[in-house]
Image (cartoon, rainbow, N blue to C red):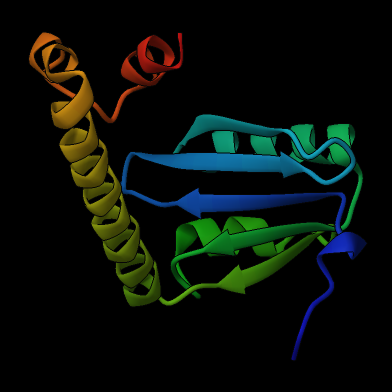
Length: 138
């Protein structure tokens, strides 16, 4: 079943853990993303859920790495959340591909710079940073 993302007021990705959860919220009206953390306590999760409802209304899509457990139980009691369990191995595969692409691109950049501007490669320990990209751009 294909779900149209435009039906949601916000889309949330949760990376769960036993003490805190990393959260990324994308506002569908503006496209802006915010990252934050929520402690793994029912009261904190409830406060967080109510604050999202005040801010975005509903429905709100929530992607998380499991289909059951304490966090799922807390989120299921709110009718403005639509939960989408994600297979964690799928996330790992995607991350592996992204890391491979990053290495491939930085190797190509490093080789090009060594030919034209070798001193820049010597000046920076890491060329996959915003600082380095800003320096090259200027």
